[in-house]
Image (cartoon, rainbow over all chains, first blue to last red):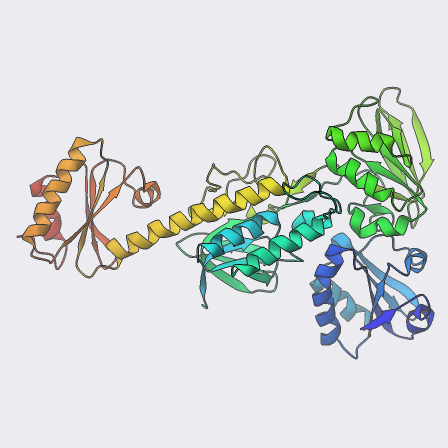
Length: 106
Length: 412
């Protein structure tokens, strides 16, 4: 999975002509850490279909806020540089996330 | 079907992990199934000052890491999985995870814990993750140098508010009670009153959270005057209690009207072999220390239950010859006489019959399982099955009739 920062976000996400999945997380966030293994296998299983990234909000707070993310964990799907769908903490369910990816790839 | 565990614990918070420790130390095959990281709610509570033995600089996550390491040290298996359904009938219980994995055990300890309560205030749902939060350790960072509001006034609300002052510019606590009245413990209240970054709004509730894509402000209602004021904040943290995560248990074990699991002092639920521990139980005090206590009690009760089952299997179900099982009680004269009659029958059989006795007061579960309603009661077992019974009138004639009516047994 690609590690995003405020330096590469524009290029990797906003300028990418396809579907990008971004996991907003932070090392101090236990629920985020709990999800990491599932996120990593989700990225592996779907490798090549889309771009999979994670953003450690600890060092990139303003970037997260600019993306309207002020609570983690949050999964955001982008398509052609635009925000397509947001899963906030309570909605995160890996099956639903997979379904959303499949939907966006059509 | 793969292996059958002795004890399967659903939930890896302090209650579940303590049950793991006690189960494993008793050399029972024990596993804890946890959907996230072990630690439960305590793992997202930064400052934990009231767990006995740990004070000073310990954090919730640190203590929970110790709990998990301790359980694993004694051999507890920690399995990643989210239990969504269960099969509780019969001697072997099964749990099914969201991924379809099935695990089986002789005993289950349910420790699913609780989650933050939502007040369903207008804007609360819409702005979740966009300024509305229930987890300070997860989200405090976003509010560095910003202003936040905190709703609640118990231990969690006040203590988490103080944690937030390390990040935020200003933390405004909205309290429903009169000025100076807080539900939280006095030590934390004192510290909070001295904290310069905390502002207090008394006799008030949150009316609405305003914002388009992120939280912009909150509308606060004074419950005495009815007056509504608006305050610009970037975030709202709710600490207004928790609700038990027992949806998946509805109709399976007895729950009270608030959906807490009903148990007795042995942590037994309404289903034999199924126990509960921690915040999801109906109880007086929900803390890490009481969850740990519940876990220990549940594991020990399960151990005793398994020992009872084991000895029943050995003495009754798996015996080669037919077994006369007497349910008796020392205070019931008749039952002692009955045993005398059975002993005679066994002696006369020349080794083709065996006798087992169960004191009903100490083996209530087994008695109930076989619908024993009177003492004495005698059941004739062959190959683990009940082939005949005598309820109450245990006479020599009755015993002879019982033995003759069943196949393969000879009376004299």
